[in-house]
Image (cartoon, rainbow over all chains, first blue to last red; front, side, top):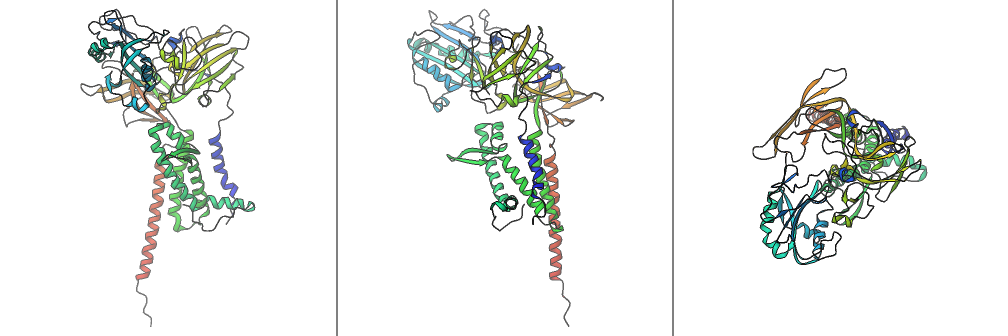
Length: 215
Length: 418
């Protein structure tokens, strides 16, 4: 029955097991030569460049309808005014008699914190209760860059934050969020409720005109 | 399979060697392992919905054990790796060693060898195979393959033009094991500073502190940015890790802090990686998180990338690459790599995988991406199936011969008794 040696038979399996468990004890930093294809680096001074924020093309506020250098092309709705872009805004537009209505496009690398977090951040700015994940997932979609983006519309008292504790009663926030692992795009319009209502068709026209410049 | 054993196993200490031998050779063990493998395969397949392909493979099939919830009930189960090891031992000892060697059982013996080859092939694939990609624009050539999912931290001494000849690498195998609340101090005598890595996140995005979303991000602010950990993507290759790095000059001086993010590497083969740069002892250094990479023993030059779209839409209809394989001591070899027509050479297989850049329009110059696989046991499943098939055929023939012989004996007229 036990003529052959059990330990001998177990040796191959033991060695296989040891191979699978190996790898510990490697030096912390390993010096290696770089091959020709690895030798060149781009030197940038600011984190803004390194994290691809400033390299993202921004809207050209001087062009007639977006611009070749912007990365984004769009039609400016009638009565809307282009404003200079800011570090976080690729397109910055205002509307209304005193420019009290605002619409902007922002892009973030990665999921930008996720869809639900951003929907509820917007709702928080309007003093509205947060939505559950299921409620966020049930929000209607509208096309943005040819993909289904979640549409958000909230009425309330608008607190823009950004270092100010001002709030604006009877406002409406209307926006689209396209969140994917590849990147997040936000189109957000805010203003007095009646003004936003009057400009909702212009908002749709603006969103439909948004494309990525291929040049 | 191991032969059945109906006797109870005596687990008293003096009988342990025999008891272990009988346990690992038992037919019951083989049956239980096969049932568990079915369960694990089912859970692993369903788990891909929630975890994604790579994470599900790691959790269910490359593990020794795992916990899961089945119909809301928490369960603790052996992982695929443990089950396959046990089955390998069981089949080897039970079917090849313990079983009596008879001509009658030759077919089954051969088919067991085939199954063992399949298990061994899976182990070799798990331990020794590599998979990565190579992306090239027409005119570009390379022998370097990059990993889809593995990122490592690199320190490079830079010239003023951004050229480095060598690097100090903190390997992916070490970096990936870091927890977000863990801090590691790394020292190398060749470098005039120590490194402190902390706040590692397998998927993260740097957020400008001017962005409203930054208010909700806990953690250090460096150069106007915070590092926001993100939920890991189901598609592991989409994850972009990030961490905080502190450089502590050993010769004195203030520590230098930085956020490192994998997105500073490159998304396009023409891009150059953008390291965080700092100067210690008048030497410019760069620090960055970059893809783990390795070389193949030949160079692939992309001569032409043919890309066709369906009329009127952006969807790809066909794409293929015309390449030249350059190898020392060999004549340059022009080749085509198409869908389902890979280039196999020196143990490596180049598949036409995808193209880029994303969002490219008709007329834009595009790059071709090859999936590059190196698996020493690539063909073992085929060989094992052939061996198993031969074994079963031999077994069938033996059984057939036995049957016909017995039948002939049974029905042959017995000599009339006087």
